[in-house]
Image (tube, rainbow, N blue to C red; front, top):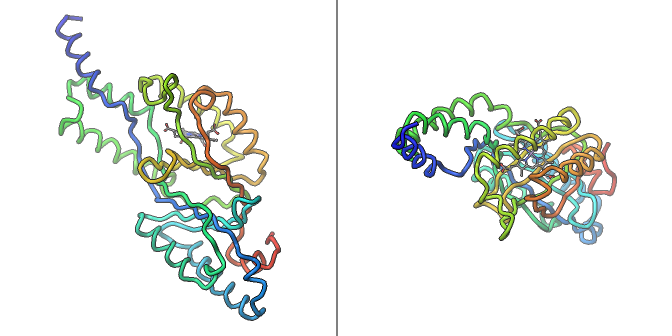
Length: 287
Ligand code: 76R
């Protein structure tokens, strides 16, 4: 290798962006609500039935929505009673879903406890390292128009191939576990200071552990940097909630979680189809 070559490739590498490429799909809103049972209970029976009917017909339509579904979960524990999860094609559509719910008479009896706004994200660490290397090897300058065009072309192809994962239906499993996460940015341990190759290596290991649970759990990662208080939202869906504990416990020992994962509150819910909403409101969990 000549001296000038080594200086050149060093300069190019130094400018290589540290941020991994991502592709994005549905916009996602989680809404955690408290149900005001005291006020609900004093309503005449017929009024309760009418209010529940109005809410469940809206929710039934949202469950079937072709531009992204909604789902209702009954939350376990004190953090809330109901959790609505909405997948939509834009933030404006999410806001529209939120407004439609807020306009229901039922919402007089619902109190927002928390919410989370994010967007389905596929992190492409592996391909990123390869693509950046390919382009710098060709002498294409990072951030130049050609660089951007090449990346956009590759991402476009990826987006097409990944459509089912970017725009999924809400998995039908009985249980959901949702929690927000950060990657540590401490004085000593800082994820964002690691070289991209090292982050790619750790994410690859993470994926290998995850894949062993492929048949038992469905995971949807949403990115929320710039949208909400944490960096990612994690949604896990399974028919047996014990799988959440096994998977998350195993991941705790994996480097990227052991060293860099910080967690928010966990929300555990049981799926409630729209048709079962009236029963849920009267204290019976639909099967
Ligand atoms: O999407 C993919 O399948 C590609 C590999 C992959 C990525 C890029 C993957 C696989 N994850 C990715 C990104 Mn994950 N994941 C979590 C948690 O509890 C913990 O310790 C962490 C919470 C779980 C349980 C989990 C499960 N993952 C991410 C990111 C974004 C980070 C970034 O880009 O820097 C986070 C925060 C995160 C967290 N992951 C898988 C799983 C499972 C089960 C898989 C395999 C899925 C499959 O192949 O079917």
